Figure 1 (cartoon, rainbow, N blue to C red):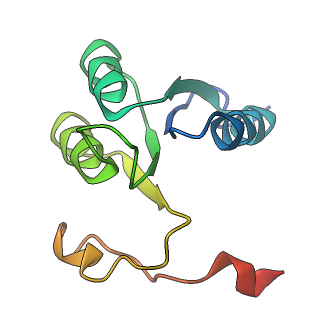
Figure 2: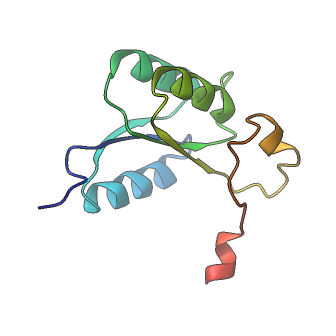
Length: 113
């Protein structure tokens, strides 16, 4: 039995192809998935959905509410939940200052290729 089958992930990504790929991969790994294309849509889902265990969010969403704002609200509503930040933009200087003590090790995923 997959122990993650009951866990829910919200994927927030404005690029539809990347969002589709992330959702497909998380589903294949046994997660129940929810998805949003904008920060505003994600905030509405966070308010409606009581059981979101993981947030995977792009930082720059091309909407008024960015990934930092979505993550901030997620942490208020789901204090035990985890956040994974995703960005194709390596120029995120000072990003860890938004959530002191919350930033993990930043690494270049291309280094694994």
